[in-house]
Image (cartoon, rainbow, N blue to C red; front, side, top):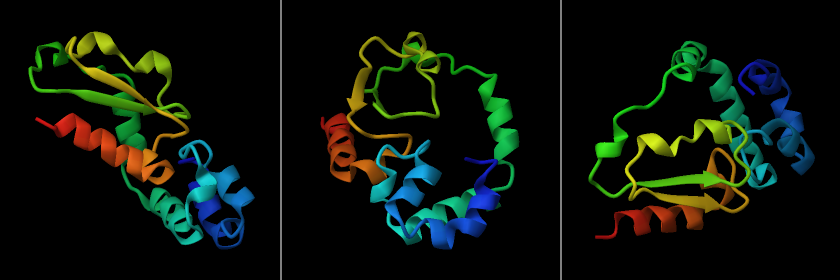
Length: 131
C-alpha cells in the first residue's frame, strides 16, 4: 500500500466513491475497507503518500525484535484482527511477553481495527484497563 499510495492518492477521488474501489485499495490494511467513508479513505491514502521517513522506519524495525517484555508485571493485552494482512503470524512473538499476557482475536478486523469494529476495540481497551 505504501508504494502504491502516490498513485492511489491521485485516483482516490473517483475510486473511493465506490465500495469496490475502497475494498481494492484498502483491503490489505482494513478488514472491512468498504466501511471506511470515501473522504476518510482518501485522507488515509494521501497521508500515507506524504509520510516522510516511513520506509526507513519500516526497514529499521523489520530486522529488530522486541526484547525484555517477559518481565513486565502490568496487565498486557495483545489484539490482532483475524484479517490482519500486514503483520504475519510468525512475527507475533509470544515468547518475549509475560505469561499473563492476554491475546485476543478481533473477528473481521484488519491492521486498523478501529475502523472495522470501533465498539469491539473500545470494549477490549476498557476490559484491559479495568482494575
